[in-house]
Length: 290
Image (cartoon, rainbow, N blue to C red; front, side, top):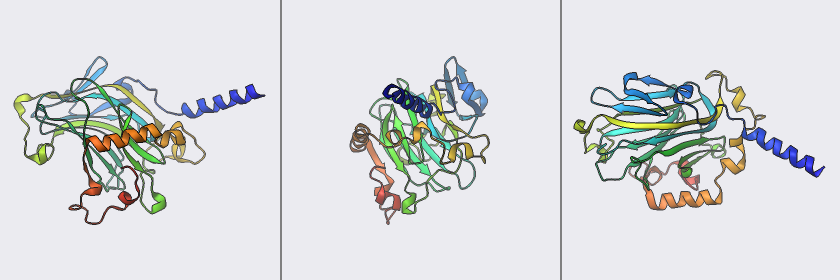
């Protein structure tokens, strides 16, 4: 009986873990498609490249939409003088009251650290920016950027190190993104009006084309049949691996990692910007880590 109990426990664990909809490590064309400027989106074997020049940027989008799960992409950012450019990797729903989770990589002048900005939109309201310097050069090798979205929280990760946690605080009267299916997107574009040193450093087109490279495309999430049919993914009776407390809550080690990132690499947090927010945003008063 002990052996049978162990077997059933393992079987249940496998069932929970295997609920993701898309197989990890898929080819680009299996999960994504070019969304604009198709001639600036190039597949080169296992690597897909987005190109920005003075005629256009480029972008791609997932073929399906999802409600909860984990999305990951390995990215090698624009090398050299990338000032004025922005490379984005994000999840978003549609419409004016959309939800959105953003990674935005802000270009730099040669030799300066790359800045990563994260943001969270809920019901069309953003203004939750955080910025940090990466602890490595993201232009020389591929690194993994992930968004883990559950009913409990949204976790932004770099090489599996959490850099931000946005918790579900509905019990405090704060809306949380849980009722809109999202697509997965990436793009590169010119944003020299704000991207580098607040727009002081402009894009030097003599360095174009600016190229961001992608590989190892993974989406382990609940795919919705249509953007309006969420029953497959949102019901209380469904259990997915990302709903398990051991996954949707940071471990002690992950908490230490997050504290280290914030202490050593964070350069801006909207929660402490009194000029923009004379009254501290409500979620900032309750989040242990943001």
